[in-house]
Image 1: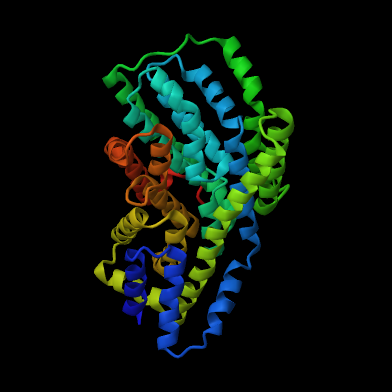
Image 2: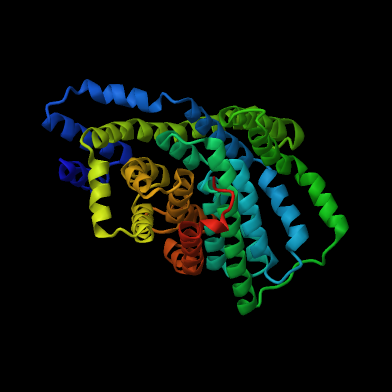
Length: 419
């Protein structure tokens, strides 16, 4: 039964069938072969999406799209440039910091890459930075978009693993910041090797002026995350507040958006969310089949038979997660793999919040590993460079992010807030 499920799923993927439909078809084949009533599919699809924490997902997606469309990212980049632009390769630092900050607003890797890239690419070209390397850095910085909260994949994991969204958000900061620091270190090394130019001299006046312009964007994560961690509102309520705040900033403060633009953005966000929810719905059928036939338990027993060392087991899990990220979109891989690995990591006594971070970081790296590398495609569209050129330039940043994953995997003491 297990081999029928997984073989049929991968065959459908190789045929080019969308992931959500491939999951549904593979599940249908198993249920039909076993003579199970097909009404189970409708019941499980409804039950899989009937979760209050999932309310946050469409609103965080919409808030990110609203802010990416407006001037918020531009103002944040100008502020970061005022602080670090005078350094050699300062724009590289600005790219990473802007990615980290926008990550605390959007919760999406592609949105972070698009917002930062659209703003920075013209300036990077003007100052003769290596185009491929710059595009690769922006794409790599975009991976932080799903690690630093608010994070859509973290919400999905919390629903599947029955964990607290707030705890995952709280613990997402440290690996996200370390990812940023590693990318900055690599970028600075390349800046000196390629002799990148310095920007304008540092000026407190310039910092203050850009800060005043960027303050509305800076306040966004403060309001969202401050409200969550202080207990004033839940993550789902925070998502709605983020949308309202984004509308106010875009329509009445920066005035860079019209009602017509808002309608278009809402439509695009709804299309994105419909795909996510359809994946969640069909994956809930798959999860029911896995649980009903005790497949995760069998997989856990098989892996544990290979070694009794938890570090070896976790390494194997991390490798599988990285490979899945190469071939599958982040949300799809997360929804499919989490129910499979939960019994295994629970048997090992691994903290499920810690494991959730490992899953999210590992799959975030998949955003820059072809063929399914959404951040690279976004960067390619913005810069006009071929995927091949950007892929070659992404290698040092990819290795740096894998190092962060290994640190997160084996050195939980580095991340002391995990509880």
